[in-house]
Image (cartoon, rainbow, N blue to C red; front, side, top):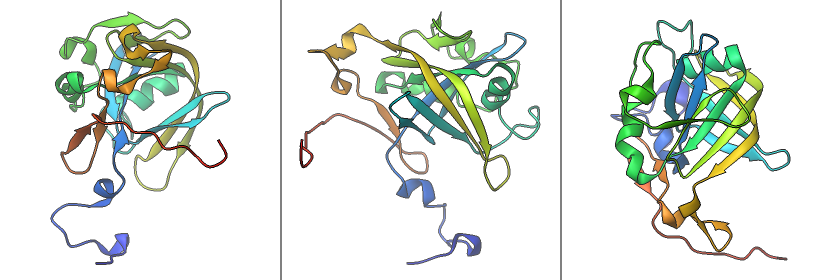
Length: 201
């Protein structure tokens, strides 16, 4: 099968996000200029640089009460900070609850009963029980073609690692089973890890 996206695929559901899988989930916490907080998952998320460490996430839809974007991006535009919280399999249900189209005044930490703690380097909350948290300062927001397609880049200014996820000096993903996004309504968890040595190492 071949199709051009502008012509449509003719399938029951768009296969695009089922092709690019698995994707890590950035559970993004933000704070608006008025002090209100938001917590929402984004599966168009990844690390993009080592030195200095940098991450990105993309928001691809809008809410009627946020002028062409979603709460996360609107808050970051106001305060220039956000925190990426790593999602483990055990947190799948509360993460999913925070993905709802809630009004801007809803604090998803409260709605999903997610414990929060203050970040160290930015004025924002983080998910207290997450395996890891990346505190970030905005470096740039890029508007992509299409309605409401926005990419947010940030520099990591602080890193939290949950103590039980450290094993022999390594951050060990097998201790918490990272949750990943597939296509449609499908998710996966990482339960097996293997090593491959790169040539020249």
